[in-house]
Length: 157
Image (cartoon, rainbow, N blue to C red):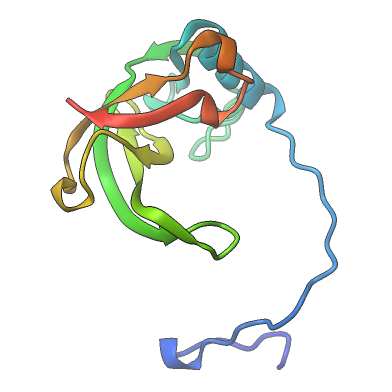
């Protein structure tokens, strides 16, 4: 396969078989650390506002992707939002079948220009729809560890 191979049609897409020996370490960075700390300690979401572009980023970032301004204005954002898109998952990350299907959704948080990918709960897969209003359900404080899984799931409101 050439370095600049370009897929013209979906039927021509290739898959890499086997293992790719890659090691890396992911860190959430300064903005992500503050975001997850607020979830862990206070059960709330913070976004960061670009005053030039009037964009509220969630998850937050340190620079605006449109004007490249350094961002410093943290704002509390609602823990409610709408399902922007979703999928029904039948197998776990390791390829094993799930006992019951789970719904994974991109939830656009109210008043922001972003959102989170997370599970939906307290709803049957067949009842989920684009535009559905949802709210975050946080784990008990003692169970939180400072990551996205401190949110148990989003449920319909």
